[in-house]
Length: 113
Length: 114
Image (cartoon, rainbow over all chains, first blue to last red; front, side):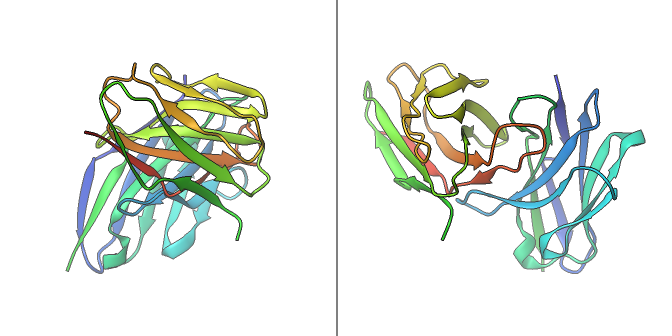
């Protein structure tokens, strides 16, 4: 079965610092990969998605992620954190066939002024 | 505006009571999903439906039931058999169920036990 591991349940960065949220997946076939963001008491919003082609994917709000097949990773980055980036972030993998998305446990990002 | 609506925003359940959470979408999506979210546990799939009049159990279906009589609606009933129902419930939809399909989420319903 495919799975997703998000390293670090809580990450804290200073405003203006680099944001790096880690995601590793297990998959026997090339996967489709997603990052979602959730603000408090709200639903999830798609940040970006990797399907095929270019391995560096740009998303909304200045975030990007790079698919590295050799490392089975899909880490999310943003060069400069804003206070508004404080939220929970979920990595997800789309298994092959007809199975719904598999989500990681999430990483809560705090941004310190 | 197209999207997914969930109601109510907050729901209170008494001991032994069944309660139903509403999920409606006007995106013309075939597939719909219900997730349960608990702190530190991410999203866990309860049920999903690929098409009208069809649905499949997810990872934690015990104590829950669903129906899919209309394309736009996928209500979730939390039965009295669910002993620990306090959680945040999220409904989602996608154009179809398959590899690579993006899921779009509603705003969620928070269920609390009195």
